[in-house]
Length: 310
Image (cartoon, rainbow, N blue to C red; front, side):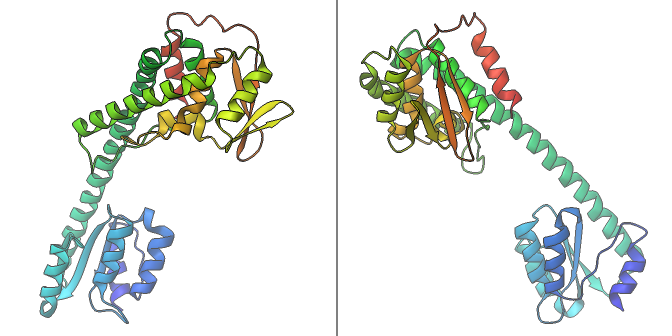
């Protein structure tokens, strides 16, 4: 009866979904939680207390506005729910109809504000991730020139083209555990480590890579766990070698094998094309023709292509 009465009262303000128990409420949240702006739960329900449903909603739908309706004798439980972050506010029973409608309108307005805030934060984070990805590309150019060789253009261009083909993602930034200074410190350590790893790989590729066969054999020797030769062509298992220096988490230092692909491309210095052969394998096509003339703005174009794929 209370559910029917509540639905009749609230439906002119917003669509209403009702549940008879905590279990039914959790089932609705699992199925339709993304549609729900405000959750109101009675404290006394069959088999479980309402704050259990509110705690479930807090854990799985944190932006949902949560409210508790309770009798005067249960105010201690309502206050505890507020203090633990489970609810926005409580509504005492018996309901005052005008106050209840006002509370619901305020809750719906708060939900709208939260949604707008979350959307703004998502857009801001997306921009920051794109900026970090572009910064990593320019830093890779500096690292390649400083640690490996000044004529790095063709190798890095081939690496960025492969990263675009492998649908490189923007690196994640966890602003809950780091601020901007922490991010810059982690990125600096990361870039130095990448440069040192590339420099360590350089002697491995000193022998002339003057033919596709020699280059393919060299790559297979450098990455034996990930590369096999099929009909003379290298086949790489997984997309990680193509994207790790760009996708890796902030501050994550490289393992030697994670930069072997880039080091090999810098040594090969000629056109390369990757092609996805199945769910996990990528075939590498080598070209003996001279490196293409990239022009002065090649790095900017490569960065734009990477960002367009996000």
